[in-house]
Image 1 (cartoon, rainbow, N blue to C red):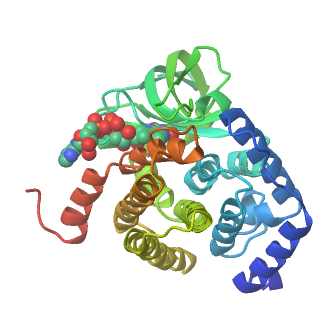
Image 2 (cartoon, rainbow, N blue to C red):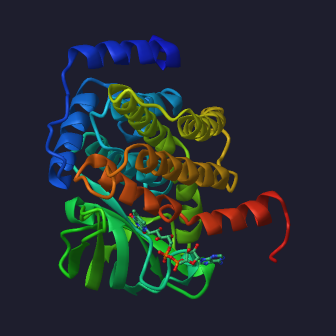
Length: 369
Ligand SMILES: Cc1cc2nc3c(=O)[nH]c(=O)nc-3n(C[C@H](O)[C@H](O)[C@H](O)COP(=O)(O)OP(=O)(O)OC[C@H]3O[C@@H](n4cnc5c(N)ncnc54)[C@H](O)[C@@H]3O)c2cc1C
């Protein structure tokens, strides 16, 4: 085993590298600036090797346990060199692409994503199909060696910055009739319309598909593999992906402590309860990272991580609202933007109600009612 495959040694050397290679983010808080900075950080990490560890060699990585990726995310996002939103797409989409794309396609495309040469988006949700994803209706029809796609996706994060999309389509009725494609976003017939959110950032989009031609070799898996692919992807959306977000939330908690200290104030009860929520989440997520590193295939138990993340994130920003009077309601501060965004934590990646249903039915075996 390479010395750098040891997580403790890896972290020490990564920290030393980050200390000597200045990747500080600009003060500009626009989404454009965040995306440019994310690309800059990805390129630097990839070229120095850090962004390749924890990914398999067959997809341009340098191997080693998944834990190494979690450490990179924790250090980079915890230091606020990249924003957790764009960073999360790496962890959400890449593992599934490696599992389902042909080896040639994965070897060609994954390095482009890891190096920041491209952004990818996740085209799952539709206007009538979010929680009930299996009811999706964007249709793919065979046409010789190609497929013709018609339909609409919504809430597609960063679609306006993306060169590719992992897209779920319907090719036949039922769960077995969902098929995934890796689609070029500049293909004729694709229209992307950014949606303005209440926190003032056009993070997600509507994406329309009108007679979009996709080559059959861009299918991920075989016809009907879309549902297992989605089930494969969602646990990643709730595991390695969370580790970097948790690092970000801790850094904001530290900011809150510093702001209170600067005012000579404290609120031990609210701050203690928030710390407990963050710590519970981190302990749970640490166990998940270890299970993943140990080769366990993640499944519905990651719904617990999602419920804890949503609760801790909202509690942190509720506490900021309570202990910094006016910061949310009156100031144009990052606290305000992030407070508003934190309301989405119980929705993105599967709502808290749905996660609780999964916990009740699939983990506790409590039946449908
Ligand atoms: C910030 C953000 C980013 C996102 N990014 C993406 C992305 O990149 N790609 C993508 O494909 N999607 C994305 N989504 C969409 C997200 O996956 C969906 O919003 C989510 O799955 C919920 O679906 P919905 O919005 O259609 O709500 P619905 O499914 O319509 O749910 C509405 C309400 O009904 C409740 N509900 C529904 N069914 C049940 C039930 N059976 N039992 C109890 N309660 C129920 C829900 O909990 C919710 O409160 C994003 C969402 C957000 C907020």
